[in-house]
Image 1 (cartoon, rainbow, N blue to C red):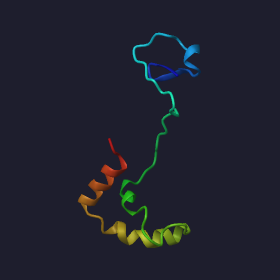
Image 2 (cartoon, rainbow, N blue to C red):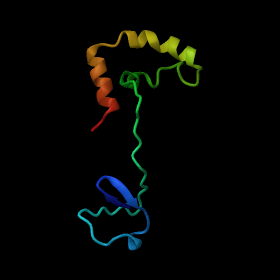
Image 3 (cartoon, rainbow, N blue to C red):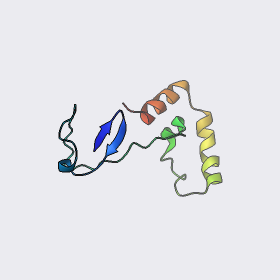
Image 4 (spheres, helix red, strand yellow):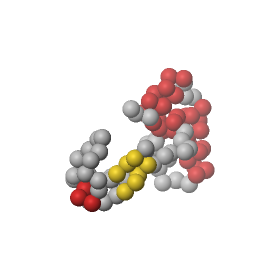
Length: 88
């Protein structure tokens, strides 16, 4: 893949791309996909992803089960949830 100014210019076998670059990354054996941007996320929900009884239920049952938990989240819980949601 050839990237110039943070824009994908070309994709193809290395032999078909320009042979000089500022940075070359050997990605053999890897899968390359474009970055996916999450435009809507509730970070606090990372703490309740696996609460029993909230898997495979309809939206209303999910909300009824989780709203009481979310209402009790502390500032520290929010900090931890955000750190989990945005690892660096």
